Figure 1 (cartoon, rainbow, N blue to C red):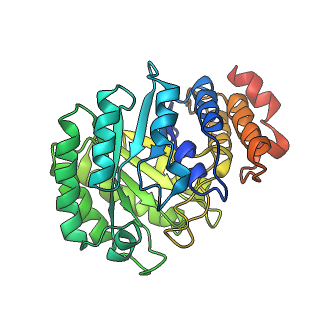
Figure 2: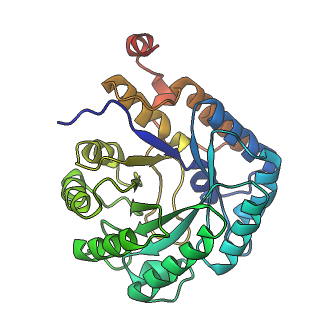
Length: 315
């Protein structure tokens, strides 16, 4: 098995966890969460989704959150912008210096696209998303494109890996795209799928930046993260969410839960794979969120804590 000296982690909880929350979380709580994650050492944070407040009232205060947070030196703050209206909002935020990166949305099935308000074929959408990336780049923002449902679709079923590879090739060819996110949107992946997928993707992209976004709907998230660490992908980022919270619900069925940041970092640091993130500080964030909202955490570490002798060794 391949052991890496370090790996990049992108914290997606401020968007993922909050959009899946039953109630509306106050703006001040959101800002405090993000600040806590920054204090924990998270260097890239997916902070908000710029969707319609009617579709997702949880994100109605996206601009207010970013304005209250303000520019953060040394930390990449990103926003998900799934459509043209959202991109216009992202450009305004970028002009104010409040975001550094925009996440754009593609998918392997028309069903997932439609669930996200995008009535397009897969081929139509990829050309549209590249055009959107070109628009975003005019503001000197980094662009990332999600390929959702890369390992299976909760509405369509099995996804031919060739569909994923075709999208990867097209996005890799586009100068406007800075990073590709291979997303297991509904937690259908297994380690064998992951190993085979990323062996093939590495042949296409070389050292081009690749992110992985695993949902933990069926408990395989950590195993899948380990499988991608063992892959040939060199320029790798793993998405995770504090508390293991999140999901693309209510839009996409079965999309509950993300890989938990504290569980992932605890495992990686114990293996000698440095993340630059403090497990203890992430635990403070997760426990704060639990206390502020009453929402049960899905991560394991808050119940038992880090392995003390490993923590001492890392320190």
